[in-house]
Amino acid sequence: MKTIVILGSTGSIGTNTLDIVSRFPDQFRVAGLTAGNNDDMLDDQIRRYKPRVVALANDAAAARLRRRCSDVSVEILSGQDGLAHVAALPEAELVVSAIVGGAGLVPTLAAIRSGKHIALANKEPMVMAGQLMQEEARRHKVKIFPVDSEHSAIFQSLEGHRIEDVRRLILTASGGALWTLTKAQLQEVTPEQALQHPNWKMGAKITIDSATLMNKGLEVVEARWLFDIPESRIDVLVHRESIIHSLVEYEDRSMIAQLGLPDMRTPISYAMHYPERLALDLPSLDLTEVGKLSFCKPDHDRFPCLRLGYESLRIGGTMPAAMNAANEIAVEAFLNGGIKFPAIADIIRQTMDAHQRREIDRIETALEADRWAREKAESLAGSLAR
Ligand code: NAD
Ligand code: MG
Image 1 (cartoon, rainbow, N blue to C red):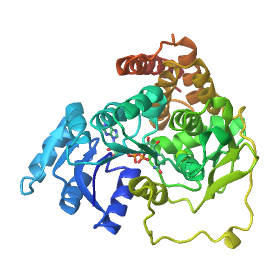
Image 2 (cartoon, protein in one colour):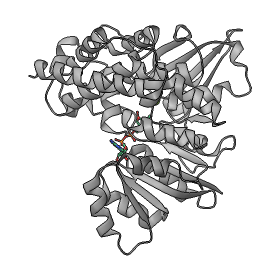
Image 3 (cartoon, rainbow, N blue to C red):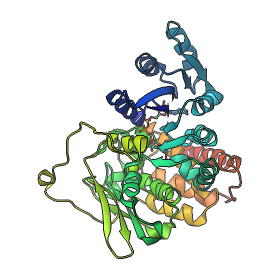
Image 4 (cartoon, rainbow, N blue to C red):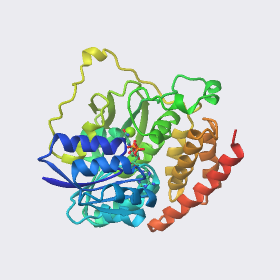
C-alpha cells in the first residue's frame, strides 16, 4: 500500500490519478489533496477518498470548503503555506505533482525537500529550475518519475540501457489543434478553435501550448533536465496520430519507442507504481485499425515557439524561467480574448530579448525572473491588445 498526495487533484491529471486510485484501492491511499479554487470538486473528492489534510490556494474557496465540510473529519488549509504543508505530509511516500504552471514550483520543491518521490506532470517547474530541482532530488535521495507522455515513453525506452549509449532522444509532437492552418488563418484563430486538441483531453493551458508548439519547447527543456542530456541531442518529430509517444536512438542506430492509445492513465500509473505495471482495464491499441502512421518535421515559421525552447536552454540560467512566465501570461491573454494567437510567440520572444539572464544559485533567483517576466509580458500584452 502506497500513501500518496496529489497536488492539483481537481485538474485533468489530478482526476485521472484519482481514477487509478479508485481502480486499485488496495495499492494506494490518499493522505492529501490540493487545488486552486475548485472547492466544489474538492468537496466531492474529500468524501470519496478521505484524505487527512487538503489545501486550496485560494483563501475564499478554502473558507467555503470549511463550511461545506463541517460534517467531515478533514483538516482544511489554504494559501501557499497550506499547499507546502500538504506537499510534505509525513505519511506520504509519493507526491503526484499536477498543478498547472509555475505555481507548482514551490510545493513540488517542498515535497522533494521532505524526501517524497515525485510523479511529475507539472512540467513548468522543471523548465524554470530543472537543474536545481534535480540537485535537490539527489540531495534528498528522491526519484522524479515522468508523467508527461513523451517523457514517460523515453523513460520506458531507456529501461535496462545506459544513458552513455544514447545518441538522441526524439520527442513526438501531435502538432496540436492548428497544425494545418496557414499563417494568415492563424491570425484569426479563436480560443475555441485552439482548444480543440485532436488526440488528448487536457487542461486549457497545455492545450493552447500544444497549438503554439510551446508545449514541445517546454518538453525539450523538461527532457534536458529529467534525462541529463544536452539539447543538441534532443529532436522533435511531428507525428499527428499520437500513437508513438517518443523514441530513443542508441549509438548503434537502434531505436526504441513506446506506443499506445493516447490515455494519460498509462503514464500516470507507471509513475505511481514503478517498476511494476498495473493491469489497467483500458482498450488496447489495435495497429491494424491504425493502419498507417505519419511523420514530418516541425514548421518553425508558423510555430516559432518550439525554437524558443531550445534557445532558452542555450542561453541557460534564468532564461527558461522567463520564457515560461511570459508564455503563461500570453496564453491567459489569448484565452481572455485580449490578444491574437500569433502574439503569444511575439510576447515570449520580446520578453526573452529584454531579459537579463542570471545564474540560478537558489530558488529565489528563478522566482524573481518569473515575477519580472510576468510583469514584462503583461505590459507587452497590454500594448498588443486587439
Ligand atoms: P488543469 O488546468 O486541468 O488542472 C490544474 C490543477 O492545478 C487544478 O487542480 C487546479 O485547481 C490547480 N491549480 C491551478 N492554479 C493553481 C494555483 N495557482 N495554485 C495551486 N493550484 C492551482 O491542468 P492539467 O491539464 O491537469 O495539467 C497539469 C500539469 O500537467 C501541467 O503542467 C501540464 O502541462 C501537465 N501535463 C498535463 C497533461 C494532460 O493530459 N492534462 C499531459 C502532460 C502534462
Ligand atoms: Mg506531453
